[in-house]
Amino acid sequence: MFKILESKKSCEFEISLITIDSEHLGIPDTKYSSLITMSSSEFSRICRELYAINETVNIEADKNYIKFYVNNENIGGGFTLESNDSDSSDLQCKIETDTVVNLAFALRYLNMFTKASSIGQQVNLFLSKEYPLMVQYKLAELGLLKFYLAPRISDNDDNK
Image 1 (cartoon, rainbow, N blue to C red):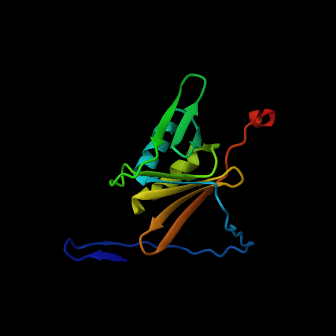
Image 2 (cartoon, rainbow, N blue to C red):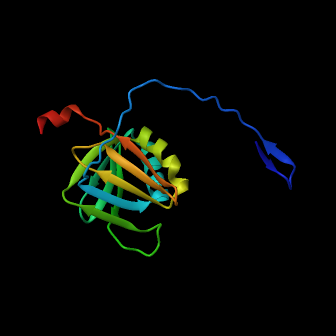
């Protein structure tokens, strides 16, 4: 129960806990080829706006930029952020990469992940061709919140 004494309001919730007997799925430590650190509010805005156009976003990372873009039958476009060391955390975009990465992801799930944008000013995106995307938020002194999303696989990938 939460009480606010000044306004004489209270809020009460009840949570039922469940026990799930299942095998623990661990995520092994992996070495990602690309790490992008950017504003969490900017990442949230990009995902939200691109979802209005298409359900899938391509994320391309190079040593100089990260590009979020969509394509469908009628419209295509996106956002490109260049690597910089701005003093403002809202403008800052740091890119560390060994190789060019270009993968497609479901915006539906990325938009769910961006709901955690309010807990931190920065988000880390870990990209690699071999592993799922890892979206990481730092929880002040408490630790890290990590989300994983496997890339979309299209039929066109077989022809490359």
